[in-house]
Image (cartoon, rainbow, N blue to C red; front, side, top):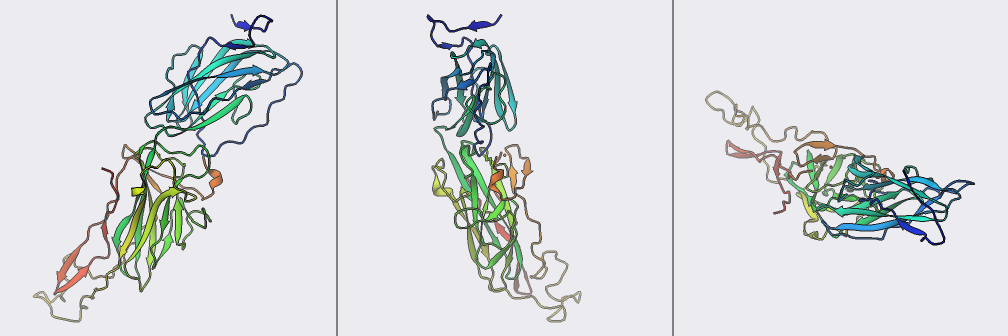
Length: 417
């Protein structure tokens, strides 16, 4: 039998509901949803309104325990209330055995509790129900969605007076790391360069308050031209992205995760194909861990590893080997420098002609995923830390001439001890 709570001259107007809701919830979108228009009670309809949760910044491990008040401002009773709570992945329910509540995971690792409050809220009266959640070790940028509908049925999507959203930042941090590359190429050649953005934690990253998402700024080395660009990398203008992702020929790019999420120990790779100018000398570019609007994230307390170099060494003392018709020959009448040694090929080969990597994300299990975005921040809404390993340098002394390999890479990945 339902417990009916009716106002009387001798009863308080706010009554705490006996069945505790242990939870809180959040929509996993990077940009807050627009508020839905408030519900207007018609003749003979309930109109439930939910109070706001107090702001909080919990430390990992702490439990948040507050209450909200559900008030009926309509003209008819709400006979039973379905109360829904959602939590982003850095939060969880401290107890998943509350009577009347069903727990599940929806969408992008969103924890959900759907609780049936067996009560009647008459017009002009209120009930109180607790909202409880705990901050996990990787908590950082979080959100909680909580509420019902104006009539007491399960809420839809979006937010209004009966279904609300609280964003919070846990008392923690995340260490963004920029990883560059040190490689070698010949003037006039084409060279691939792979850079990375890594999250060394302890908090996961997904901006719940704005579209200023975590990103990697890439400055192309002078004397080179970006011929192929990942779809996740847009040209950077004065103060933000200024064109669609994948646009070639720009001096500076900003790259961000396709799903706007960077989990703890996740590393994102972005590969550019660069055309080296015919008269280029050794040149240096830069990568920087920042945001899509080039604002240093407040949660990153270790700026020392935010920047790294893209260095392309251009040899200047190269001398071509003898042609087949020139110079002495060996006992097999083969021109010097053109024997059967597979390493003894002449410099000036085809060079790097590989395709552009589309923002690879390496997870903690070693699996790799790829994604693509169109550079439009309106579409705003993932584990592992391998560093870039380059190809080794090769050199052979043939006929007294040092032949330098076109591709020599030295990993310059910044590793956290």
